[in-house]
Image (cartoon, rainbow, N blue to C red; front, top):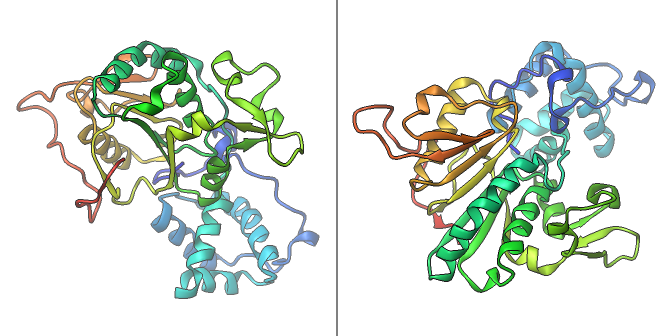
Length: 328
């Protein structure tokens, strides 16, 4: 998931669990007990905003100290200034990726917001028919976290057509956090992540994990439909091609209005007329995009035909956007 501009983190009470603040350790447990100076706070918060779009404001300094302290302990460092110097330097590329993991919290679930998957069930027969007739069908889980959303999409479609792997229907699942992508690729989860009574669409694709430690693995038919990749949604996308369905839920809530608008415009440019966009329950479509997205359900939108002479010019707006590999 991308935490973009506008994420002021003003109140943890209103944040989804994905970005809820972790408790701050006691000062005695903090190797950086000398504290984060104002100058270092400004430097690291600017770096985070530049690299990820997350805007961390002064009221959330203590939250940032808590999360950075974990990184300092992991690295055996005792001074925030040394850490800031590391992540600002050329040698800090790997640690900047670890920093992304530290400042995001990954809480998701299978079949979360189930009305969206009921809507996908309604869309599924037409998608399956097109794939069986030789057409190309693509779905995107943008901000996929540890993969439960993408696996839920795959399970929903396989419940309609168990032979989907034979056809050109695939799911791209992306997230900014490299750690959650590795978890998603492994497809192994604690039992509590599955729940006591998993939905029937999912339960037939579950099996005991290979380590015999009580964890549960998703079976190969689900994994065969999905490609998990690390991707920052605010950066140029290294693929071409259109998506018939895009799930981007509880992501743009952290964007400022213009960044949210730009991302949705980029989605519109990658969707055919009639394509479906699902967003989070707290998110609302920008009215400037009315020429492109028609509300058809609860936080569900259909890609409409572009109205001549109205709305903004439809184009991708990320700096450096250009031709890239096709989304296979």
